[in-house]
Amino acid sequence: MSKVVIENPWPLIFRSQFDFKFDDFKLKVIDHLREAKEYTEETNRVTPEFGGTTSVVLLNKGPQYRPPHLWPEFQPFTVWLQEFAEHVWQAWDYEKQTKKMIGESWINEHPPGSYTGEHHHHGSHMAVAAYLDVPENSGRLLLKNPMHMYLHGLPMSHTTRIDGKYLSPIEVKTNDVLIFPAWIDHMTEVNQSDSDRYVMSLNIKGFY
Image (tube, rainbow, N blue to C red; front, side, top):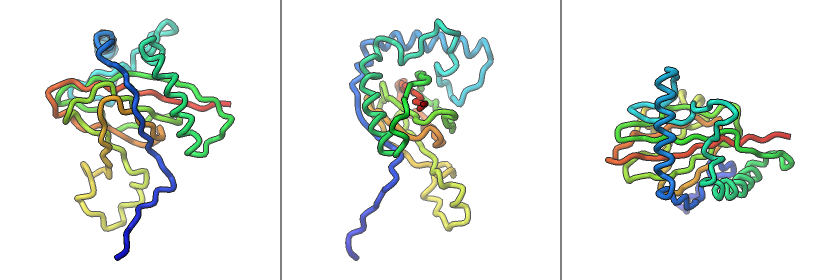
């Protein structure tokens, strides 16, 4: 048989790298996460986090609150991200005149044995996952096949499924930055390392 080539005319996932120099401000992130954990416990709010994960996603205490992407430590990254996001925006053939802005950002800390459950970022156009510190064996990103509802009548092999949800693993490492459509359901694998894993998530929205 001649060579088989997999064509992908509709790319959904884009990867680049940025040197966050996370160790320079890791203690500030840990303090922020501690505050978020206390707030989440006090308000009894629910997030898609399991096994001890701490997320800053709910920590918004009004106009004085500054989410991570507005910190001076992340200013070089947000400038860099504008160009990366513009490249993806054009690849998806979205309206070129649309202005883009970061709507939200938050940081998750995954200690050993924890993970983020399946979810999507409703109301946004781009989901950004920025990997600040990814120890070996601390878990891959899992993306749910957006065609999963059409696969139930097909003779799917169980070996092609992860957790029975048609999830595809994406290998990630420290300083990786991924952009994918915000509507795609996604989750993380369980952190099976002996160290904490730190990921910053951002939502990008377009408006006229």
